[in-house]
Length: 174
Image (tube, rainbow, N blue to C red; front, side, top):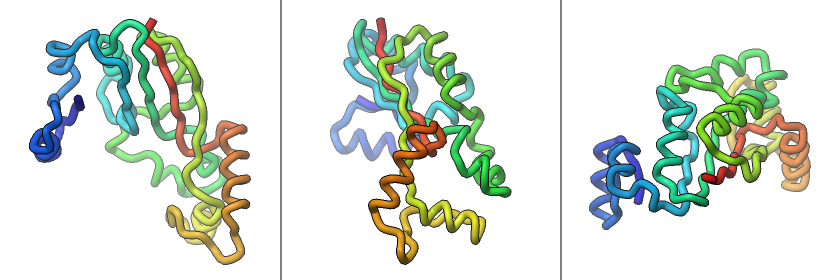
């Protein structure tokens, strides 16, 4: 099953034979307490009330059910080093910005146990260097002389130091 507020995407998914709800409340009415897993990628920062959003996810899950939540990391290294990155990071469509402490606080207040919270960095050193030089993202473009090994070391360093671009939180409903 899925939850998709966009009518166009919802209709597309329904035409593919999937059961899609327009919001979590509708899904809870029909499937509350039945779902094994919920995956919410890059959504919590957009919702009006994150704790309510997490409470609804908890209601959808059966006891012992699990959820994976991902969100941009407020402590992304670019925030600390690139002068104008805030203009890119702080966008009108994001209502909330999370770091480790604020995400942990939110999910615990919503009644979840945290199984694991980890940081994932999706972009290589070239993206960082392009931000410094051009003040724009280049995503996965690799500069000459930068190998995948350097990118891997960069990502691991940022993940260990909690400066990666994303936070992933594996949750369990008690």
